[in-house]
Length: 400
Ligand SMILES: [Zn+2]
Image (cartoon, rainbow, N blue to C red; front, side, top):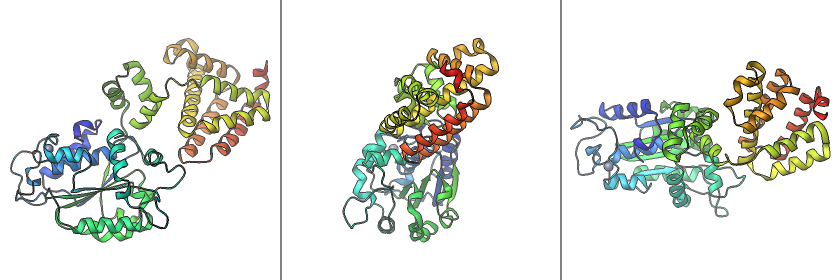
């Protein structure tokens, strides 16, 4: 993967290039990014940049000077070349000097799993889905509700790999994606992260530094990767997914700085949430507990991703209803699709601003729980009861 294939993050790319051109590459980098902002793509692009024979001639094993101390021979190029043998191997995740560690699940009884057991699906998945997250990865290997781990045995593999001579490049790179999954096993890596063998670079790519051992954090150089902007996501949707500009901008506005979210919204864009949402609302304000249980069952069956989309769609309608109540229906009519506008107008007529805001708040909370694998039925049941209480003040108006 080249830097050019990573959506924006130009400041981070520049910073990484300068580490090389100014001979101050740290031996252990910690990329911190929300999912869908480009943490893993940047790590892959940077690793390729380091081993590329053109962008970094010192990387070729026959070459003498070291990345870590000597003067570079010429001006540093902007990107890896993408065509030399090292780049081709790096882009397919088969370069023998770029090692990947990532969360995995048990695959044989009584044998702790290691990343190598899953490297073939990981390569395919990462190439096909550069912007993704560990939940999607674990779904890809059919983990279902199993927790992904980086095991003590995997830490031993890392120590072993780092003790070997490099094969083709002067450099050895160890990418640890989701060090959150290391738990206390991470202590086994402290020494090698602090004093790695010569020409070794660790790149840890995390989403949440609070779940990483402080002993690791104190030994790495933190590189914060910001969420993407609405403009970044809009232009990526247009250029990569051929989405029309207006749609791209709307999706980007809902995706919270994550290209992964944007892709998921795009994928479910054609889904018709209106019928399900209306049925759910009716069960709350009109038809009662039996109908509620039926609809909760139905929602539980559609799966986590669609549940998130349903909640997101509902929030979108409520926010539009809030805009209507502040600015008036006419002034915001063209900001959303006809469906959303019509639904929002209806809600806005029988719910006041506080109620609308309270519902958004509850939906946000449930979305957060669903995101973290909460039990769908329990979550939607609790949510339904809360919505009933928020709405019930004025529910009689709807019944008419
Ligand atoms: Zn190259």
